[in-house]
Length: 292
Image (cartoon, rainbow, N blue to C red):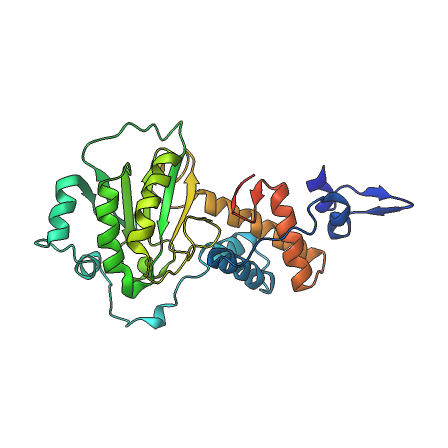
């Protein structure tokens, strides 16, 4: 009912007056003064993404959701135009070319899957299969998000940790476009406890490396390098493609809420406040970007 009131379908009576939309929000929320702690870098990035989207003259919610999803991607012109165009060049950049030490470690423990027209990632799955029914279980994932220039060192250190962890798969972008996005490097787990244990090992190993940061994910450290999310049975691991993940669902809900705020003709600050409150009714806690 609260969602329907905010969407202007119903009104609520307070005293002699009726209210709906943003005018009703203060009567609906006990937590009206609760706002995310934006001191953490990932919350800062997420807040800036919403502020950016609120100010766009974008009427198509799908396009707006895509812009939110891609927020904090580094523009292409920040790197040479001929850099990292193929996955072979990416492998050279990551120091996993054919005769490298790191490649030998990968071959010993992981099956490699090269990108194709439908899947724009270089990925690895563990040679010793660990039972996981993706159709009935959630898949937990760690985002590892360094800036591009630090990716080779971060990748090598992370591979060592992931090999000794309960990760069943990991992937990395196949070209320059993939490596400039914030969610360039992702590891997958069947249990949250397995994810947390791997994160505990990754944090001290990656400390000191500069983070890029993935918006709308839950932090695992204090500087934005590591964060987590969850995919359901219909998502990218099962379908072997992108889309449908928790973060995609969050940005779709955000885009719809932002579009609604525009129909209310709210100012930018009012719109952000309205959107954050509505996300709670959509089942998303904007202080952590996890499910309520």
